[in-house]
Image (cartoon, rainbow, N blue to C red; front, side):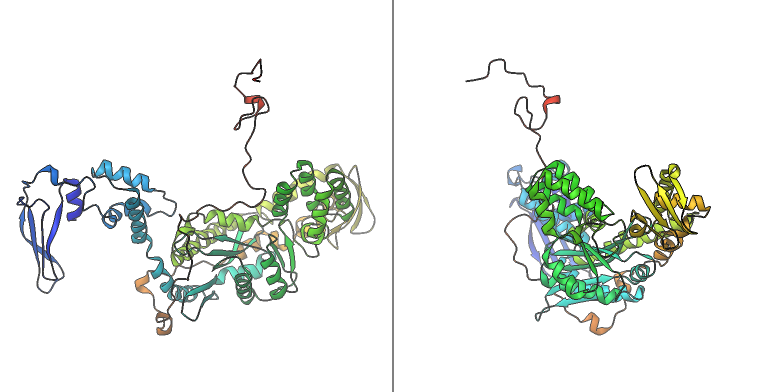
Length: 555
């Protein structure tokens, strides 16, 4: 390219004539003889160089320090390979340094930033084109993966409002082999038009994230959550004993009570703990809260709550007002199993941290290829190699419970009922009903240490007593189907109504500032600064302090 050659060889040119048939450029120095002339070939879109004077006779004084050919678009073409990976980081300062070293050209920060935006658009596509491509992409996604549910919502001016995507293999795997506990959460997007990503995720029998559905909307408000959860219900249907886990966002609570009225709604215990840490700053009460939230039995829970009230009465009132039935395992109406937080949804948000900068269609394709397709293949392959009745995680847990119950004293009551003394408490196990008075067996659906002791006394296997959700067979079923790619865009075959559907970018009011790329921390997540009690400085503590001790304090 002529512009790149000009920067490398330290000369500048100006266009003297440019038309459909002829192109002429000359040196910026009026007295210089350097020039290039080219004309268009017949029956072709190519130009042929007819005359090229290679020698420069101009003075170095005519060369601009910033170089007139060093445009942001040309620089963007030179550096586009730097942005081919989603996680690649190449900052404007790096671009300035590269241009100085490689081309000997000085550019401003603003030009470097524009060059970066241009390079990213060349590699990832235009955000505007990405919205217009969305209907065709969804149509191909449904064609390649039968049973896939997608939706696009626009306003009266065809501007984007919401979209929803749940792949057929994910839906069928969830309904067949995944515990009916769904964590929902939202996180912000980082592209030109911003927005919010909504996720609905579950946990498979091997304690791995199982993505169920994705959505994109303006923000976490009543309308967005209502729309997303309505589409989610249309995708998965009505399921008995459904449980949703979320933070205490009021929009989620209202939407779930309307759209899933028969489902149980639990609060993420981590988010409540962050509120306690931020508002009350009492570490002892914070630790007791976690123990109380995970307690299986009601008497044990109340004992811990009594201790919390003794430590800090305000913390106890705060937890009481949050509703015991929302955050405690002992009082929760449904079966949360071992899922007490929205960590599975937040982990997925963390995985997509860099990808959330992509245009919307590229981002959804990233989710399909780098998460769903990859995870389904790897986990299906791994599950097929498991030679145990239970998944690796569940088998390890049962072995730990069995080891813990080796020293328990077992006394039979009936054929399948046993009296277990564990050294501190007396528990009653009923293997036929899969229950124990400690309630761990009842709620987690995995034999507790008392049940394992009873099985050993009865000389029966404890594996059949585990919920089928933890079996290797169900893990294989969950990932049985492959996630198929949509193919190259040039090979897409869609109907005319899909191709002609207009989807414009959303109407957003942008602030005149740099786009946010880091999540705003919730209450209690702010990084604390260490303060030395010896010298009073920040960044270290007394044991590592190297500052001299003042023998005579300054008056």
